[in-house]
Amino acid sequence: RVAELCAQAAQGEVCSPANLNSPEQTVISGHAAAVKRAVELAAASGAKRAVVLPVSAPFHCELMLPAQQRLEADLKAAPFAPLRCPLVNNVDANVITAADEVRAGLVRQVSGAVRWQQSVREMIEMGVSMFVEVGPGRVLSGLLRQIERSVHCVNVEDEKSLRSALDKIRVASKEAAAEA
Image (cartoon, rainbow, N blue to C red; front, side, top):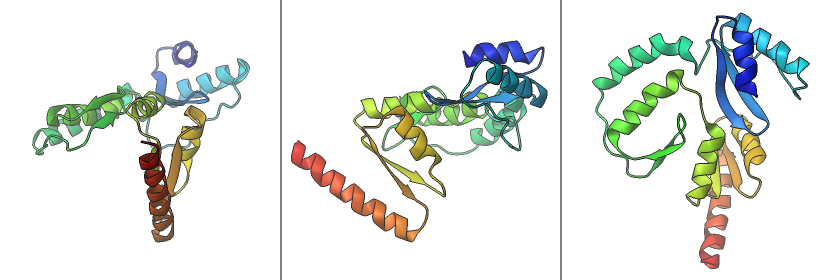
């Protein structure tokens, strides 16, 4: 439904889903006027909440293609090695380990939508039951609760919260080992 609203609001400009965050939240991106029209259409269509976010650029949409091309050129010169543990690439929610896939994913995510909900579901399918959010705030923890309430998330933003998170991870690891 969000994609339909974006298409209707575009009117020759760019307006598209940019972050597919949870069943309850999709962020859109594009030309400011088109995004404003989409927000108005969403509100008129009965959306729970529709607001224009104060952002510095139209992230994760085709307007970022010039930045994507610059990043691609820069990353060609950067050495990449195969990953030691799998990574769920947020642009397509696929599990990757190959160096060329990592480089390509970094490039594609600049103008591609973030598939956060799909990425989280993929990690849960892989057996992940504990997530660690690093940095101030608890936005990702909140999104995780909207996606799947059975998994745990700890937040690390300073030394005190790091110690608390490590304690929670140790307890969860012992519980998981006891169940196995």
